[in-house]
Image (cartoon, rainbow, N blue to C red; front, side, top):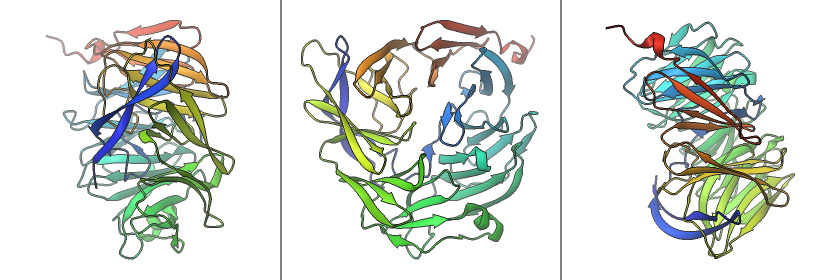
Length: 411
């Protein structure tokens, strides 16, 4: 993989709420060649199959434990010890069964709602770099840095029904370039030769081999990123260095295509798949609506701007919002990471249809952060335990403290 990229970093006109960009050379590539989303220390607060979650799961880097918080009443509901707490840990949440998936180097654990752990239901030799969880169908796919693909079928409580680990050579001599689960439970894989393969995960686990439909040629080369659309299981967005396309899996035809001539700033599956581009005068959000790829342009006003770096991007067409967090600190990645810098962050939300700036909030320094449709959650680096929830519209603040007391050993 080529992890050397050149892209532009956004800066935003703070007083006018409009967006512009300037070019910078940085290292990136961390969003490319993955299955699902890149692993993170906090669970996403929305999923394409189950919608918004009122529970947040986070790996506390201070006390090296997993916490679960209820966001509607801002309560700490449980804490879990992990194997090998000295390693980085990444979490996923199965809303329907209230179970937690914990990923770490060579490790996978699943905690059910009774806090009972199933350690190492499958084993990796590498470190998980990305994962796709379709909780409504009990499907989990984990991809590691040695190109192993682990699959699990889970019941409603997070118990493992079956599993299998396969290699990346799914079809012929080609290997996986990118992939994801769609809402129907099919694993869509783009291969290194440009072909597309539809995999049946459950049958693959049953037969301990790749069970798939015949591969077909997409007509694309150099595929780096793939994202199914939640509103139509037959449509998938695919990115190469020069194009963003919509591919219809039934007709096997590209139904819409967009040439990437501006500089790539961010790629995101949250909530609706999209990319963010920049040039000297504007930022463009490029997305899918129906069967067409469209763009929304945010123009630069050149006076009194502040230089900021884009950390994440969330497009929610059903709510008519585009939200992002930026920072004055230098960040270097295409993928979403709200904790890549923990200084000088702010949250901005636009009404997407007419680009009205609806919200502009500071994010607390030195905190682990996750953002939902209505709340900003921040976990402080406190050994005693401290977390806050900010209501995005009212800016009201709720706080919970001292939830780590019971885990502090007595002298």
